[in-house]
Length: 197
Image (cartoon, rainbow, N blue to C red; front, side, top):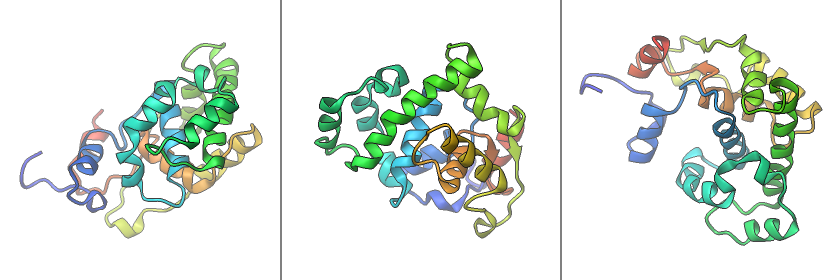
């Protein structure tokens, strides 16, 4: 990035946050494991700041077997106890339980949309935007919505399928993070870069 290029103001100057903004936020993801990771992290963020969760991300990866949904779906009460004693993650019983439930539901979506293979969860999520990122043209941070009709629809469908911690705001954050929508401001250097992908 050149010294004259601008970036979205929300990432501030924290190097971890800046790196996340510059290299990850809004980049289209189609890998089921990575999508599952963001689903869990966005749910963990509820009531917290994203930077708090971002700082715990490596701990989450270690604690949740690299976010392998097949492994996480098999966690038993012993694993739940281990996670609730892990100071490296958000130790909230409901959030931990939701990660395990959601892992099983991801496997269900892989079966339904991918014939039981990796990629079915991606097919499902990307179906909400017809397989192509939505490029918004926000000029000010205050214009960004917390949820949209699309995230409400996703939330309702995920909830109906048995997912937990998937409210419309969490779903919209997920959509922003994994590139279903490009919500970089139009004067941010990443907006143009992501449009050209």
